[in-house]
Image (tube, rainbow, N blue to C red; front, side, top):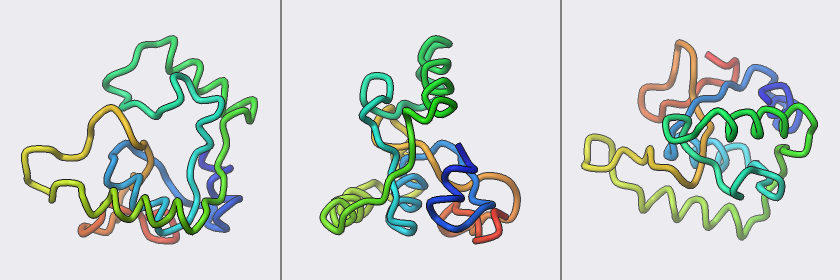
Length: 123
């Protein structure tokens, strides 16, 4: 999955982790999204909220390339920016880590503390 993200974005060390806010930041920054056509239940769900069957379907989808990264349109980019702006701020009642809307973002060490996003070197 990370290799596919690196290929489409030109940033081979891009990393992934769950957070709706980080996911929206990622797709608005890189102008890519996950094609949900073949994604289980047609939505990304927090790993904390899924069972083994769902997880295996997601893994199989990435491995078979039925689930993939796609470039997004300017209109979709505007919608993502709007959704990101409407998320509660950090430290509020809702961290943005619900069971819908996204699943990628910063991971590993060296995250940008402001956004939770890795730098271009994946750190």
